[in-house]
Amino acid sequence: MKKLLMAALVLFGSSAMADTRIMTCVVPSETNAVTLAIDLADDQSADFVMVNLIERSSNMMFFSQMDKGTIGQQLQNGFLNILALTEKSSQVDGVIKNTGFLGLSLESDGTFGGFLAANGNIYPLSCTK
Image (cartoon, rainbow, N blue to C red):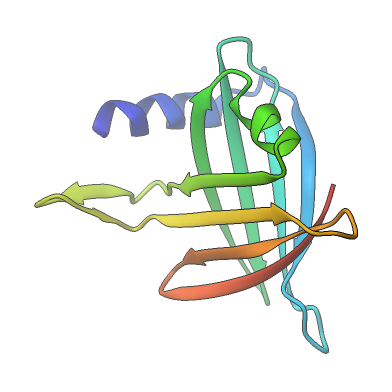
């Protein structure tokens, strides 16, 4: 787990990679105050996903690294599931801490719906590509 986190942080800090926005999400409400942006880094060896959660005036970044092509394959199959790591993610006594889970699936109207479970909260999401 530590090696994965270190590799992810090294990739995350690299300015040589360009990001492609793959989805924009909102927590449906009267104010739409909570938004989420999902970006895929342009990397030759792996799919590196960054998830930026903006809640009121705070901002939290999650990330995940998967085998190259995994994200495109998931989206083509109508879903996106990732373990959302943070810089504080760790594993203690088998428990993964300070980590979230993003689960989205394709809706009949072509949008994606699902949730982000993180920070002790569940964020219901409505997303567009």
